[in-house]
Amino acid sequence: MTKYLSLNANGVYAFLRRSTSNPILLLILLCIVAFSAFSVAQEIPRAQLFGGYSYTRFDSPTLGFANRSNLNGFNISPAFNLTYGFGVKAELTGQYGSKLNVRDLTVGPQFLYPHGRTLFFAHALFGDSRSFVRVGTGEGDTARAIVLGGGVDLGISPRFAFRAVQVDYVHTSLFSTTQNNVRISTGLVYRWHTIRRKGHKPTLSSP
Amino acid sequence: MIALKRVALICVLLVLAGLVGCSSSSTHIAYVTLPASNSVASFRVSNHSGKFTSVVGSPFAAGNSPNSIVLDPANKFAYAANQTGDDISVFKVDHSTGELSEIMPRTPAGISPVALAMDSAGTFLFAANVSSSNISVYSINAGTGVLAEVSGSPFLVSTGANPVALTVSPSGKYLYVVSSTLGLVFGYSIGSGTGILQQIPGPPSTVGSGPFSVAVDPGEHFVYVANSLSDTISVLSLDASTGTLTSLPNSPFTADKNPVSLAIDSPGKFLYVANLGGNNVSAFSLDSTTGVPTELTTPKSPFGAGTRPVSVTIDSTGKFLYVANENSRDISAFTVDSSTGGLTNGSIAASVGSAPTSVATTK
Image (tube, rainbow over the protein chains, first blue to last red):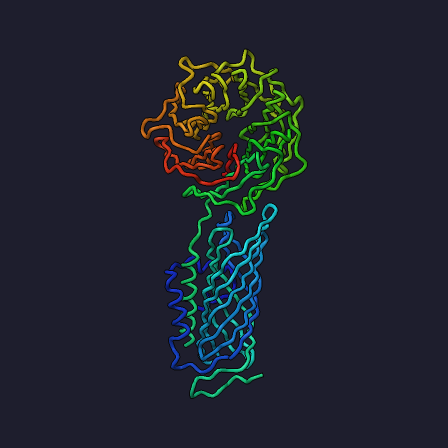
């Protein structure tokens, strides 16, 4: 099982390509991840700031490219959790390749499920995507973006966590066509304060 | 619980894999000349469905009034004849994006180059200069794509010939040039290694009125000419040893209204003709022995296209046929039935914004 959790982008994509599934299951599974074991949940951070690397497999054949494009870039994402297991999140990403780049700014709800030092999360984010394609004299476009995904944070100290993986399906409608993209992110999360579930002592210190 | 986490994560990955799907990148590129906008449009075309996807960044700037476009056999370079620029544009082809990048400077041609032809080896490029009534011949640098005019070029066809179309025989030994004003086909032998043209002994071949397109069958046995004003197809037998043309006894054969462009499928079984006045494409089966074209009755030819079709092209897979429609400013795409020669699923594959004049496809 461990080999499937490699953060190597090519390896993950190769694994993805070998697999098929029903897309409707995505939200169901993410909700299961977020809510399935509340009975053992403990506490979550009040606020989070994630920053890290992200890789996107971009659906560039819709732009006339021969193949999908491998884009590399950043993901910055602040989140504020309103209640135990629920919060709001914003996400700014920039993905860059030799012939095109894509930047997304999205906001939306996130759902969290802590288990020990591990925090599972899922989110549904909505916003805009801006792309510039360096073909010919170059052409840019801005369009709606929908991000559905989730991931796993591993606590490494009271204030820091390592986002082992965040996987997102990113739907965009750039250049009058629709793109179905996959984005994988990893990096560090800085955390402030905690929200405890009733009956549990806090374990994260407040800065 | 660690196992549970891993299972959950892998489930998410599986779902996302379903969303992405397994992509097939089997495509080719179609380039369309747009003289009115001094550009060349680019489309990614599925080898499976024939679906056109406009390349973002297209159309790409070309010279003045690009009228005809051809690709080298390796599909590394594209060449466009700029009719009012009196020159040839050379483009580098980017297969990954469909982009055309022009290599400057442009190569001078004669006056009003309107048609291009290349030998199958990609050694020489030939341009028909309609106003100066001559043929420019260039050797092609396979590495850079750059053109160099061969010794003696341009070669005069005949005063007042106004050549509008030309084609190279599959062996690369002969060049045939159509004079629309004189109603003649001029034959030339192509100097091996030099590209120098020598007119084939004997008078040029007489065809119908207003010949506008010429094609040689893959077996190099027959030459077909579309006579746009007499609504006929002339067929000439080709002597492969000398290049001499002789009209078939029953030639010309009846066609639809204003045939202006010809394409023969790679096995040489079927001939397709774009009829400018008929707004359609005629399909003929070809007798491999006699060369006689017989219009298809099942399915019934002709097949409807857009308004004023001016150019017909079969893609490299042989599965699709594209028609450039001048007045409707679009490209019609058909699926070719390789056994019957029939055209099906005719539809407008792409709108191009201004009048298209020719289509070339990569492999």
